[in-house]
Amino acid sequence: MNQITMLTIHAQFGGVQETIHPVVLQDELHLVLIDCGYVGFLSQIEQALIENGLSAANLTHVYITHQDHDHMGALADLKRKYPKIQIVTSGGEAPYISGAEKSLRLIQAEAMQKKLPPEQQEFGRAFCALLERVQTVPVDVEVSDYEELDWCGGCTVIATPGHTPGHTSLYLKQFETMITGDAVALENGVPVIANPQFALDLAQAEKSMQKLLRYGAKEWICYHGGRWIP
Ligand SMILES: [Zn+2]
Image (cartoon, rainbow, N blue to C red):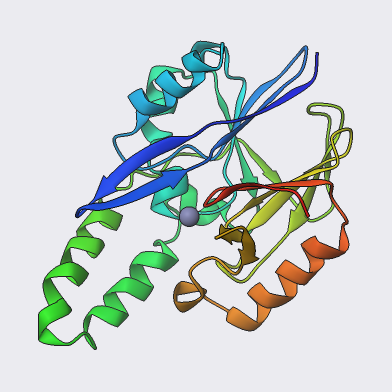
C-alpha cells in the first residue's frame, strides 16, 4: 500500500526549540526517507520511524533535498548502520553531499564570520564548527529536474534552486502532495522562503517557490513547518 508519513522530530539548539519534518514514502518495493536530520540524530530518526510503525532497517533509499546540516547531518551514521540504503540526490547537490566539493553553506558561514560584530563571533564560530562536523557520504543515484521516480505511486523531482543551487522538491502524483524541503517553509501557517538571509540565490529561491505554487498540490509538507493545505 502506498503511504506518505510525515515524521516530527524536536531539537534544542542554544535554548532554541527546532522542529523538523523528514518524510517517509512507502510502497510495496520501497521505503524512502526524505532528509534525515542533524548530526547525531540517528537514534531520533530510528525512534520516529518506530513510532510510525516503520523501521530504519527496512529503508531502501534516503533522498536528500540539499546539502544543509539539518537535512543530511545523520546521513553518514545511517549509511554506516544500514549499508544497503541507496543515497539519492540531485546532480547539483551530489558533489557537496559526497564531499567532492566543500559545503557551500560552510563557505558562506566562513565568509559571514569575518563580517560579524564581536558579540556574534562566538555564535558564528559555533555554527562553522557545527557545519564542519557533517560527514559526507558517496551518492548512489543522481536525479535531475522533472525526473520520474517509481516511488509511492509516482514521484516527480522538481528542481527548486535558490536556497542551494541543486535543491530539489518532490511531487507525489497519487497524493497530489508536494514535499518542499527548504524551497518553502511554513511560518504561522503561511508559506515563506526558508531562511531568506541564507539563500545562496534569493531571486532564484523566489522563482522556485512560484514554480511549486503553480503545481496546485492539494497538500504540502514543509521540512520546517510541517503540513500545509493551500
Ligand atoms: Zn533546513
